[in-house]
Image (cartoon, rainbow over all chains, first blue to last red; front, side, top):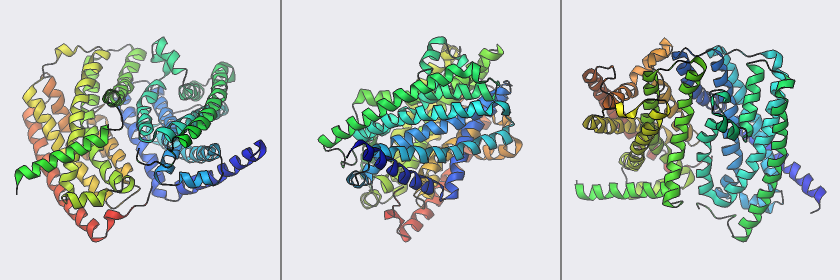
Length: 271
Length: 278
């Protein structure tokens, strides 16, 4: 297969996989409701905690944006990272590999479909959060926030490529690794508070995570009204991260796929 | 009933539960795996207080104690609930062994309770670790605590009883649903977190939500748990204990009745082998 065919097949697979993802994720309206209500339970817990402390009102906005953005991280972990693991467990992976569709195409499809589904849920969380908890945002800087959002998504889902390759290889251990990546990333990304409350060393560590940079940039634009000029560093960092993570992700996927083929792990279940 | 034989089976189930939970890796990695989530969960929520203290300049040791103890003791309940509620989903959908479980140990309710014990024991360890790390983190001296050990043991025992039977109700519901199994677990844990005096007193909730909090044993249990390590914590311990015991009895009765009904219906409808592969 030459490069042109490889790319063509990859995008065709991505289109097909994202269709299944979007259709499957939204065919049952009760799932949608659950997936909006669940994050709201945690968001509500933190909002009422801040209220019981008489914390400044902008903290409510921090919590709602943090909760909404975190759902993308969970989607990367469980919806994209674990995809190949689930496909393997259910016996679909061998069929997918036999079809000739490049794995990156399947993952790209999962990313696009998952991003769309999660965006619907995250938007619902924000709208309901604004309505119930009276959070206020600055609409004038929305375009800046949207640009940062898409840059953060590009970096985040590129990271998902690497995670998927780990799952492909290590199955149940990878699954546990995903569990381990929930709370630490929620913490280091400043899910419920601004990164500025961290000590400097922790802020430096946080700046290595695209979600932390993206969330911080979106908060600064929507809550403090900062514009392109003051958020240029955020954008540059996210672009650099997206490029590096995409390169690493594609390499890791190819490497793990070959390794899994050699070690006969592609159809090995319940490992 | 042959008690010795029954206890041997319970032990075997606990061992199986432990193996399923831990045999995917080496012991030291497993211990690290167990610790990472609660410790980062602690940091996540402790920083709510720290963020408030940093931005407002206000330090409130009682608030800090409330928050950290809530997070610490929630580990016990949350871990146990997770252990019970996921089992149906995992064994039917993922490992496809629920029908074999029925064949080898037909009392599914007792099987679920036995499987959960390991999770609750781990939960006790996590609660203590989080408490010991969390209190100094927010500037509260843990040496000020005066744990009432018998009361603490009672707290963990009664916490196991009410939350395990409440989880049994949820597990009974998940017998009828493939795709909602994990969601039930998450929602239930989230609800107890919101309504259980965990991070904030339930009086901070909107009035329309407070009756739901009062209907759950979580709020009384959490208050009594705080009192068990700090006798200066301002509650009426006798009254709270009586209310907690009554609520626990109610939930045990509901759990037994509901699960018996769910179990019968699931068998009648052949749901034990139904898998939708979600």
